[in-house]
Length: 466
Image 1 (cartoon, rainbow, N blue to C red):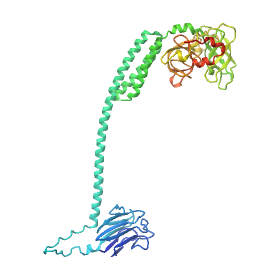
Image 2: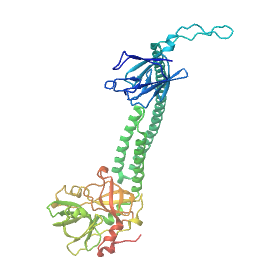
Image 3: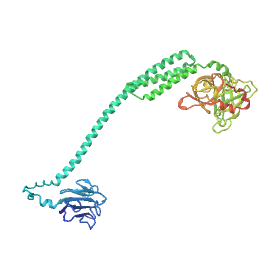
Image 4: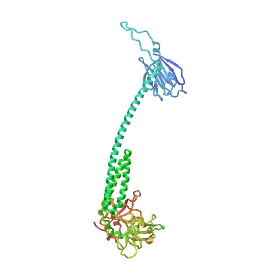
């Protein structure tokens, strides 16, 4: 079987070569049977491929070429049978070669061959031309692509329908959940109104909670109108509001009037002139009749660590300033101890209890101090004409650790150094601050156990056992 190779593109386009041998090599190397142009047919490897004639069949074998060997636009993997009219490409963009089988061409219409019995053998079907074969291959590929696209489109439509159905169900579920949340806000508002009527001393706190609950109800209503929303976030906020109601009711059981009678006069407004001339104010409280007081380190000591120039205090319900001096500053906690000039006796709290044993999470507490400093002390900021009036706020213990008591309460700047009292009227903590984002509703205090460990010796008499 002879092979005719017709080069249809590339540097040698138009050339034809005929071979009557069992192996025909193709490439740019001079030793190949069909040699492509060395300089211009750059997609062709030196030894690119071979055509092998075996038992009447023709195999095209790729010899590990760099850019691959293609038949009718399809890359071959190792070897492939080829037929008359097939279009071979050496590299996807390399020269193309049309294969013609000479024996087939010369005997396109041979005399029918006779078999035994004299019956003519059926003639071979005529060979299709190259254009038809290529068109068939292209149609096969594009048909597969179309079927894939149709299948993908069907999957997409099913997915969109499923997503719509799931989205509708989710939205309906969210709306139903939000209606339940809205009903809970109504119940919470009624409970807040009833609690405010029973406990007038907590009226302001209940009003704040009612305002927050009203804003939350509006957001839930807006979510229902939109067909859904962040149910988890709104549910968490409502649960927190319900917890605050429980805390407020707990706080309402605290006998704040009794605590105030026992300790109010021992809580003092403190004024400090720092070493750099800055003026600071805060709260301090007496622990002994001899004039030992507790406050915060940051109230009496600046960031530079220098001792203050002057300290003066004025006790609640008094208009007399008393000079004081710094006795001790804690290196581990925000605590400081000052001593009043003079022999006293001076007002003092009824005692200091153990924070580990005298309170637990959920316990009601009272905080007495001077939030906003002189503005709440009673003289509109004029420190020379003051009669001090301390403020009492109620709260609950939210967290109790060795180094911190976290309290849910309402305080403001100036409360630093304020004593925290339990239901017995004992000091269980010393306020020193809170996170700015909480806007005074979360209070941090030094636990009284840490205060007890650092009390000067003369303050030991103030310690109470549960």
